[in-house]
Image (cartoon, rainbow, N blue to C red; front, side):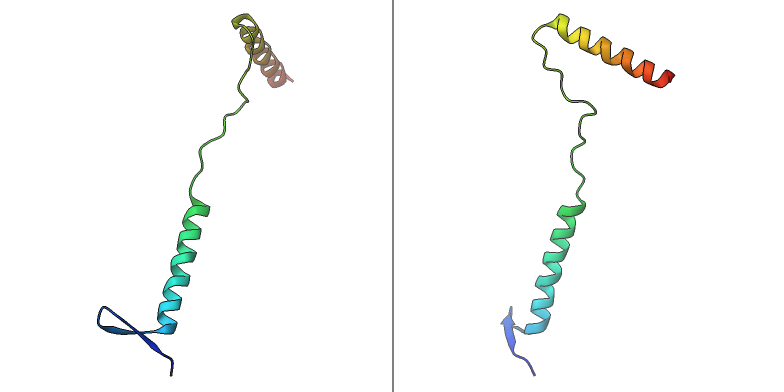
Length: 71
């Protein structure tokens, strides 16, 4: 048969120990893959040089979306 490690006074077979670590790695990987990420903003931030420019861009986008819905 296979060998054994003695852990906390008990003999643990090599194959059980290796299967435990493979399972632990798989569960850890699955956790990080399925973890929800932060939601992305719907539009990129507006980088305007003045408040007037920013308000113009917002108004333009609002009008363009309204016209798009109309068509």
